[in-house]
Length: 565
Ligand SMILES: *[C@@H]1O[C@H](CO)[C@@H](O)[C@H](O)[C@H]1NC(C)=O
Ligand SMILES: *[C@@H]1O[C@H](CO)[C@@H](O)[C@H](O)[C@H]1NC(C)=O
Ligand SMILES: *[C@@H]1O[C@H](CO)[C@@H](O)[C@H](O)[C@H]1NC(C)=O
Ligand SMILES: *[C@@H]1O[C@H](CO)[C@@H](O)[C@H](O)[C@H]1NC(C)=O
Ligand SMILES: *[C@@H]1O[C@H](CO)[C@@H](O)[C@H](O)[C@H]1NC(C)=O
Image 1 (cartoon, rainbow, N blue to C red):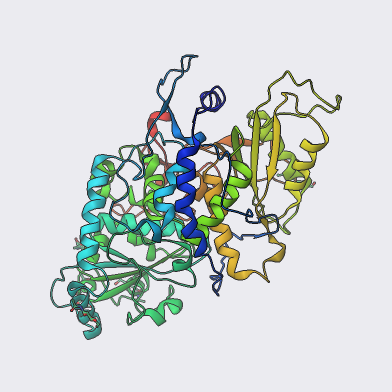
Image 2: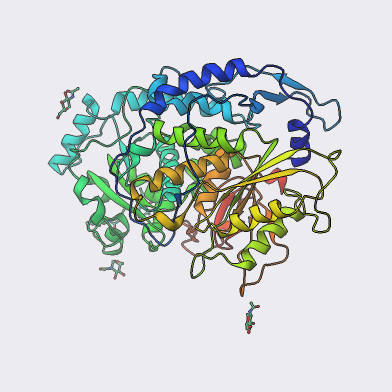
């Protein structure tokens, strides 16, 4: 996003009468808020790559549901593409279905976020391809035919129970095991869904501790949740690299080869960051061919493995049809799949309206320090500030004058910070309280939550994490920390190319403090480096122009649009 153009977009004119629509939306919203109740939930196991998330002290719901003057800043679309002063604003009707990405026909009240999200986002510049839309509709039909307890599902289940795989099944499945922190889970679920699309499988979701609490159902009519009476449910936690059913393990021990494997009713695919060379053969065409006859594939992963799917020759054409714009894979799939549940949506909208809506511009700053202790560290604060000022996302303060003349720029910015620590937020807020800005802009600094109360409020932990990721995705510009899946989710949902803070070395802020991401796509942190045909190691980040090494992790892989390179 071109920031200069975007500032123009926000500053010059205001809508004449935006409130009528806002009022009716607020009325719709009410029923959802009433459903908000605490539910006892357990936080999922956290691993090394887990995004540790945080608990609120600042957050409080507004006293009533009325938000006078809730600005509908997002109802315009820039009509003129050229960056000149004739930029016009066009009042467009809300695109509730996100350009056809979402299917119609849901009960709106059961999932308010599905239809209200467009109120909070500016019209995204990236349109899904018509081929993606047709494939999604086709997938929905398949899901309806094969979903839980359908005749086809029951039949395929019989094969599993009999332990044999003796005839082709009408429906095949990929089961996603709920594993790792919330940021990782969102990325892996999108990866599993794309894999299901590519292989004509039906995606079923292990509900883990809190999947039902956090997300709405994405597919019409039939649930995406794996039934609780699925026979292998209780083995999911024990599946690992050494499990007898693990594909990589079977290859390693010569229990299966590419001809015998096809007789099994199910396989476990271990795609966790600690996986071995045999597990990585998942990314080879030969092995994909074998999977075609296995009705149940059960997958455990904590990585966004999509970039490596683009390197499998048999998927290449289909992926290029689905995503002509390659950096939009997670952007579209994420907005298609992940609708905050009503309780989480209530948290998102209340916070947005209370703290962010009225500002002319919103800047998200996501700080995650992969270091001993949670900070705050002075060098990290210095780095964040240096980045924001250098990239003109935040103004400098005037330490000399106590007050600036009122004739200057009166624009306002809201800074949304997320961090385990409240220290960075307090420092930044104090800085803009104690001194005026050089530009005259008014800066508000907000942070929904921080770590301190994690133990006592565990059941709210992931709701808040999800709300924070979503709120970050509603900002106009984003600064993120290296390696953080929390930031990846926000940038992808928001369609934002973030400024990435490089990892500090030796506790000093690097110079330059940050750099612009090549694309809005997440990074695959543990990709394979293997040439399946030649059976040798290769640099998979140098094979095609649209799969590159990540900015924030030199061995990771991410999708980019090579026109921009
Ligand atoms: C599938 O099996 C379940 C229980 O095993 C049953 O309740 C359901 O009616 C079956 N579905 C069909 C379409 O027969
Ligand atoms: C599997 O077979 C290969 C080749 O035939 C052999 O080199 C390897 O030692 C065998 N592995 C095991 C665990 O038996
Ligand atoms: C595959 O494994 C089966 C049983 O272990 C064996 O009989 C067959 O020869 C193997 N095929 C190949 C191509 O290695
Ligand atoms: C199975 O492996 C053999 C030997 O590695 C190879 O020649 C054959 O093409 C493979 N079959 C399939 C279906 O991939
Ligand atoms: C980090 O600091 C130590 C001691 O101050 C120094 O020996 C080392 O070279 C520094 N490393 C880097 C990467 O700058």
